[in-house]
Image (cartoon, rainbow, N blue to C red):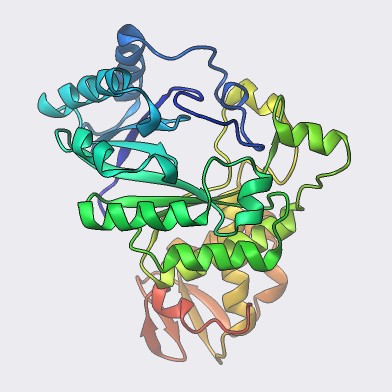
Length: 333
């Protein structure tokens, strides 16, 4: 699969009718204002200089309810991004938005631009969880948005979260499974982390919200990832993405710099402990996952398991791809 390069453009809380309980984009990004034309150019060129290749570059607008921006402002950002596509400097435009801000009127505006992916902030498929999170939409809004996106033929992805107030292990796993049953092509999953200045911080300080542990968050995300890979959904992010000094704005919760690697290690452990085999040969490129972060899976590796320099897994002599091996996992939930 060809590597994609993302130029993230953050426009904190722009278009947001409500501030969600878990959200403080100013804390997460360290930004205090929305980018103007000069700021957009500076950010684009900064990332362009970092990328090892100059193709498959996508401009992605984050941190806002993008389709809730007034039309003039939305077109300002889209026109700038489209100019990069037209000049050949970018391959497409992506953005995140809320389900209740997807409509045919908005689709008409978007039709004049090279929209490559719309990421829908679903968070949960349970109304009580959405209400507690102060989300501006309910589950019916999610399904209405999905119907419009399916008919519009614009590719879309879903963003879900674990560990929100009023949620549970069952609700989070089921939200992940439902997400995998949609026509979404990508999935972003991260556990709820308490950020400075957020509603969750107040609830955490008051003792009415307890973040899930890192182990529970990893377990949930591993199970959801297995569902996603079985159903051909691309996981584009596991865990909250924060950089540099913005990490100081994390008050509590299951944040880890290597969260994605820990999840991959947990999936490998599911394979080692639930798949029936007498002999398992693992390709070298998966060795770090099976050994586990901080060598956490060593006790599950025995004489039946070895690492070989070939592209496929060998399960008792039968060649299997990684995805095919995932279908052998059983009794995880």
